[in-house]
Image (cartoon, rainbow, N blue to C red; front, side, top):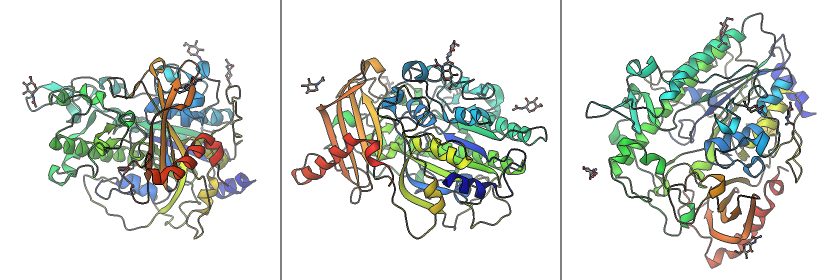
Length: 543
Ligand SMILES: *[C@@H]1O[C@H](CO)[C@@H](O)[C@H](O)[C@H]1NC(C)=O
Ligand SMILES: *[C@@H]1O[C@H](CO)[C@@H](O)[C@H](O)[C@H]1NC(C)=O
Ligand SMILES: *[C@@H]1O[C@H](CO)[C@@H](O)[C@H](O)[C@H]1NC(C)=O
Ligand SMILES: *[C@@H]1O[C@H](CO)[C@@H](O)[C@H](O)[C@H]1NC(C)=O
Ligand SMILES: *[C@@H]1O[C@H](CO)[C@@H](O)[C@H](O)[C@H]1NC(C)=O
């Protein structure tokens, strides 16, 4: 078995001597697209995540299964796709609504791990039964940073000297209620926890999940990070217009932005705006500053991981729960099926497997973007293989040498322990080798809609209001999407009731501007992609 071989590599001399198992640090960042230095954004400062990338395998084609927090998180934490969790909104708990599925942390807990959740890992509230699925998933009750309760509060200083509930919210942390910010509190708590894990009395390996809230809106962050991004250096999206051949059902509108006072005062027309160019620049600037702030929190946790003696026996993963549209296609936020929102950063650090080229000395020093501007020269391990966030559960199981969930059967609802993803341990082992191995030939996401034309609940319809489901598939060369009828009472899609089709040729149109689905010359291609979409994830398994 492959996993025994891997376990041997991970553990050679270094496994937690007391437990014989590697630990896991599972980092989730809310609304983070790959706007990171180590990906395709050289202007964004993310020295700590870049540093993690330098000892990890960096996935350049990782995709989530639905581009909104609750459904995406329930999906990757259960390793099931939204049509199996039946969570497309924030209104149900999979155990009572779909099936009593074993979660990723639960599986580790059941195998002797101490599992613990800090910040936003499960989507809080109904989707995780108001307990973040404690006690089934976690060894002790979870930690939520106390200052997160000010998410909708008027705490952002405006030009008028008053405090507002704004979208753009750089703050002086000392003056904030509670004297802190959520991600600072989560990082502090994680640091304390890692110190505790290193006490001699601790005998269990750990699975520590840390979920950071930024760069999710509001863009509330320590104001000094804004100085790193002079507004005159901020560009606009390269494709800031709604494409003429786009079926409108694909367009999300962004009513959630309109709730914020600073956006409200722009008197934008709904559903298309547009947002004035200068304000678009400000949104992008504040998103980047939020990313750099979050990167600093990641760096602090990784530094403590090393200080506590865990850098050599801990598998570290970092993902975004979905991307975020920064004006591409004239759209904002998530709630879509475009590449800018389905694609996320994914880094997987396996000690002695993904860091072999690097010096044995310090792995995770903290780097302060406010103090130094470090530029990177190293070429990291990267792969363009198509992977999905549902793959993490089987992958981490295999890496830890615990039972790997089998593939789910066609009717997955009665099976508690199975996966709709694939372990990509093989990619980790082959990383850096000249010969790229063949992998999945398609990955899948979906998004619901209440109507063809954008309305106030287009971004996030409740289950009962869903009338259309957009199924999208990314292959190495294409993105193909069908928006079809959907019945929320029996969860059935009707592929003969077509509301829109999209086909993008990624080799020539990576920004997904030209929808060629209705062009005669691509009819055969569209037909073959249609068949592949219907065959679904089981028709695209790694070979
Ligand atoms: C769900 O599964 C857990 C174990 O994974 C078990 O403890 C619990 O009783 C199950 N609940 C139901 C309703 O079957
Ligand atoms: C969900 O929460 C309710 C109320 O606290 C509790 O009675 C129930 O057992 C929980 N369900 C599961 C599966 O843990
Ligand atoms: C760390 O251990 C101390 C002493 O046992 C305890 O008081 C504290 O709550 C622990 N911290 C965390 C984050 O669990
Ligand atoms: C928005 O409308 C209000 C009230 O009509 C007006 O006072 C304000 O100047 C307008 N703002 C902009 C940016 O046009
Ligand atoms: C599917 O949609 C087609 C076209 O609108 C319709 O004729 C058919 O009755 C629908 N099928 C079901 C099962 O609803």
